[in-house]
Length: 332
Image: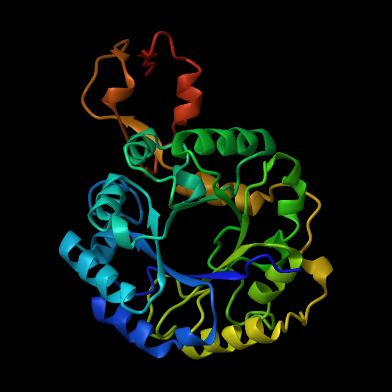
């Protein structure tokens, strides 16, 4: 039985850093065909998302929109009476949120940023208790998820939406873990749930999986979209073109959730597949010192910045275990 059937359309980076591609997409989708739909924009930063040596750093430069452009996009989107969500990775994303606060319905925090102290501390300064807060928990283990739910609820003074599913460009059917939400239900504490649909566009259930996820019991489903897969350089692997999104709208209205693949193919017995663990490890944002320090120096949390980096390192939570009176001992 459906509780909400809310569909989040994830534009991600399929716009290639070209503003007109966003407008072309918005003009092609018939948003009047379905209720409870929102669109989500990823706020990519030139400076705060990664170090220069990270493999995607140069791409982030191409995908960057400045504050003025984002303000225009968000304003124009709001005229469509669409709920607007922001995918926030760093403090630049917080800046865009603050500048457009009244027009933002909700935010998403990916699993890779949930221990980004720099980001979370800035978000805490905002009154987010009336916003939707969606957190993706892909790759985290059971005890970590339990901790994260309590942590985010306390920090934002509202229960977050808990999302499962990860992006593997695209995610093969054998790694889609539709029943994972049932595994963590004992620790959900009445939080709403979401499924991130990243099945490949060539799969026979490409248009069916999102709709079926509602039947499975999810409150929110996220589906990637793009204006034209043939022209998108990034995030097209699991993205639906406008005509396909309109077909999904029709399926939602008619409650047509018949899969062409047996449901058992979307059910896993393990908690995290190796592919899901690799996803988190390859995208996680790690703490780095923001200045040169001598070996054996004492540092505090104010000496840290958080970035994607090609190097291995300790997570913020691991560092906190070494915390003594709010001071870290740095070992090199």
